[in-house]
Structure formats: structure tokens, C-alpha cells
Length: 69
Image (cartoon, rainbow, N blue to C red; front, side, top):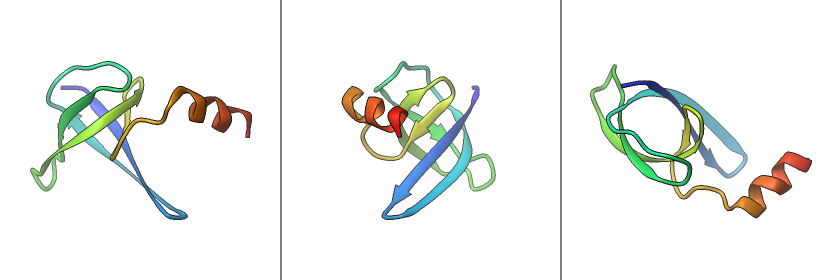
């Protein structure tokens, strides 16, 4: 039931929103979340504590590369 910050990257555009987790999970797992305003339910991939992305989780190598930038 915790809120999760969701990120969607499309080309050079990054969109962030918040949704309520409907299930628990850990890094790299997909969980269902619910947008409280629209009542839409969608699946996201956990990328860190209370953060997730739409689409596959970044690989550990990609995460290390982004941390260096």
C-alpha cells in the first residue's frame, strides 16, 4: 500500500508520477500499482526503494554506468 514513484522514459522525455503499490516486491521484480486519481492499474518494474519504471529494469551494468555520469 505504499506510494511508489514511477518513471517513464520515452526518447529524450522523462515523465514521473506516483501510484500506490498493490503488492510487495524487490529490485527487478514487476508489481501492480494503482493510480489513485484514474483508478487505472498497471505493471511496473521496481528499480529501488519506493521507485519503479515502466518497462524492464535497468541491468546492473547500466545502473553503474548511469551512476558514473
